[in-house]
Length: 61
Picture 1 (cartoon, one colour):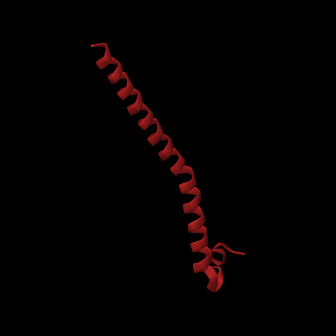
Picture 2 (cartoon, one colour):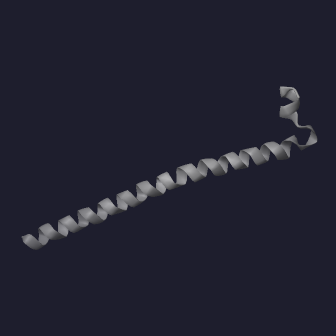
């Protein structure tokens, strides 16, 4: 099979390449979304820690 024949894939090429694109998008999202969530969790934990430290300083005064 030649490269142009592989890329064309007959009359089903639209469906095949759409499936490849969708699968690639899902893989990308499965990698990126946990990274984004991790950053949000760390930011939330930092805010909670900072709020707790401010409360401790206010109580000491």
